[in-house]
Image 1: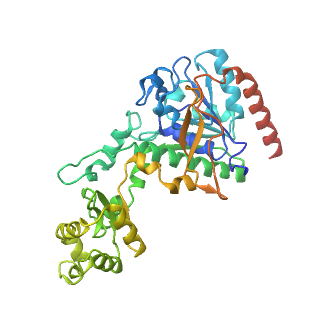
Image 2: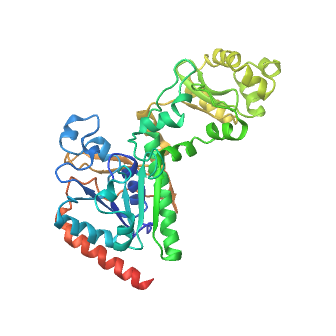
Image 3: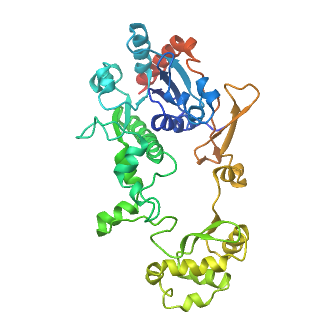
Length: 399
């Protein structure tokens, strides 16, 4: 097994639900030692979330299991003096402190930026919140759907008749977590070069707008606001979802050559010379008529047959899969994307979790341990705190 790039990095994780735990999950996959600090008797709210009521009652809901493998769990009450002392020892030895409280909550608990710096001047302190810790919205509560609405994302999701619609998964939480992991990695490199810690303030609102790419830049640069187009790609035609004999098929014939090849393969060469479709901008203007003609031609064969034929000819095409179908693709198995662990609450059953999608020198990093039960590592708290403090002192002396 390769040495992972963040081996030896110690992350103190105060986060719960999704954005923060997803961030620390990515850091864990890269080798960091992540210790979750959870409220005694309650823990991460995600422990009670998921489609299986029995798992939720046991404090290992599917939402928790999804992004907490490979971590340790300590129950600490930060209002209790003994637990505070343990927390501060851990804090002194940590490389990263991660939290996703609302702005100002950690400071009101007695740990503002200045105090954190006095405890550990090399600390990378990262907070993830809906709107950041400054500005007129900094105190406002935020969930993924709230941010989806405020970014304009929902206004362009769906068709002109159905928009606004929510994106089908918590995209603002996950992009916020990814950007936080990227920023933390950069801050650790900065500390390696300068010896200085950093204060990272991640705004899910801003990260999500950044991730929207052309939907935002087309308006900023050209003054053209995006509009909902359902399953169609605004930049080209024919590019979107089409209907075959047995189900939907995505086709992205974004280049002139691809369009011409597509028309010939489906048996409609006349579309190439039709003045409504002969050039890129005309095809976008007459998208509905073009799509109707292609749907009629594609209805003669099943989606899988068209997928194979079109891809072989250089026209990007793929079936529209369900999530269960997507997870069973041989491509994912080849790249070892899904890992199997022992289920923490059901002896003898496997627990399947996803990786990051990145091969590091050819290796797919997977969690080494199952998601922890609440307080599973309480018995290690003093030994863990002493080890972190000792390792941090050695590193500081060496630097």
